[in-house]
Image (tube, rainbow, N blue to C red; front, side, top):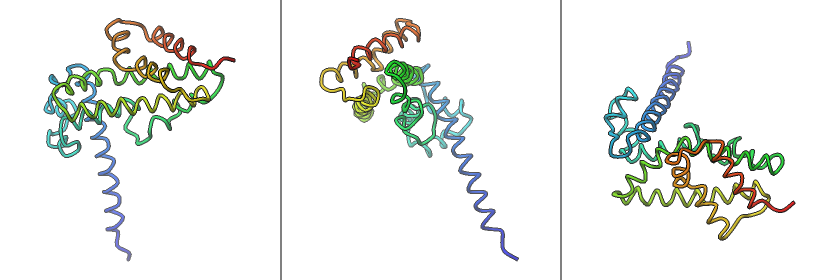
Length: 209
């Protein structure tokens, strides 16, 4: 009779992997909500652990530190889930290269707004933390530099030509978290009005027919 130990170990390993992934999701969901509501200083690992229903040691084992949790939670907020698929490869990004120029600009405005709605609170927590933490400040700067590269790539997909120089610099600033915060979070601008503003900006950049 063939032994079944190998199958049992495989099954147990698969189950543990699913459980670990679920625990990670629960921790990041809890962390995202708490950082967004209470900021960096007002959020503790103990509070995250309590909200996620895990031990603090579990968070340390998975993320190493409070900084690691914030970085991971922000990365997840940008793409919308914990699946290891870059935003540029997701359907909502690929839509930027499909349809008419008007449809592409609408898709871009929708994508940018979705990302901000998910990540605005976490970005504020990062800004707060980076004022006193050099490591997080470097990470913030690097993340913003990557965002500029992503914007250039998305614009080339949307318009069929590169956006460079001052146009790219201005677009990078306009699409940033700070402007979103001023207009929507602080200024209470509606989602529809914010998306309309973005469409106006993209129209300014669009090639002449």
